[in-house]
Length: 202
Image (cartoon, rainbow, N blue to C red; front, top):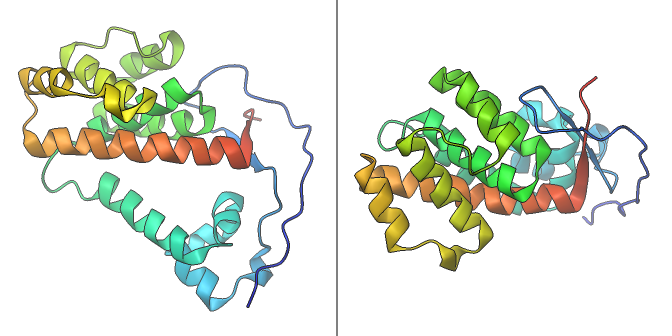
């Protein structure tokens, strides 16, 4: 069964004026599926029933198989933390990629998680306020530098970044997690920035 035709939307809600850890909204340029339009196939693609209330996921549900694969990769990168990088550092990599890409919405979400899991609120805010060149201490600086290189262009990431991460105390599994978190959010940022825009906190 084909999905309903997408409708272009116009929205005059205020843009955020700066990067923030506050909850930022997001509005799509195209109308998402309505909740009552979701078929069992769409709901399977959402993975979690609660995501049916989210416009972003209902928009991506127009291609439910791709959405399901995307969501499972996302969950594995950030929640499968039995080995490898601590959750705070995974969220830092996503925040750095989002800050570099200018994705205010993603930066707000992942900076909140980075601050919560690290208790380093001042450093997270420094990254948001000053940008990816902010001094956060060598371990976090190395993670940010690697995430930024991957975000600018994957070929910019190389042996020097790996060596710096190792010198900062990361092992191979932790370095892989930096790469996964940054690479996934480099792609996710571009998707969100293409399909909609952030809305300022109330």
